[in-house]
Length: 91
Image 1 (cartoon, rainbow, N blue to C red):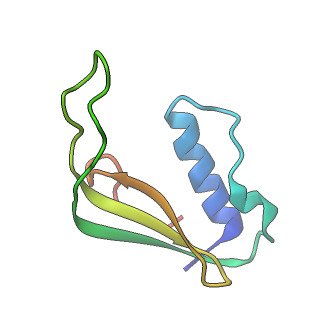
Image 2: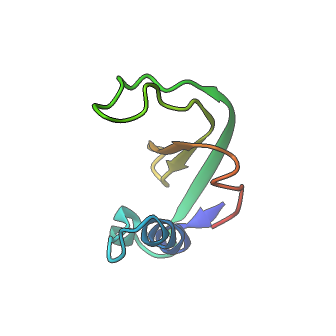
């Protein structure tokens, strides 16, 4: 269990490290103490993107999917990635 305030800071730190500083988390619009759950799901999550022109011929498959669940029970897909790029951590 986490809070909207902590998830905002965690998400913004990740966005900034991905080269998009100054981006504001949608969780900033919620009360800072509002309960939020970040779920790390491990498994096989195939990517179904078409090849990119002048890019890779296929996209990598992912082994971690992250979902953020708000206090109202709404589950929002956050990211499909690899375990090595996003270790499990509590925001």
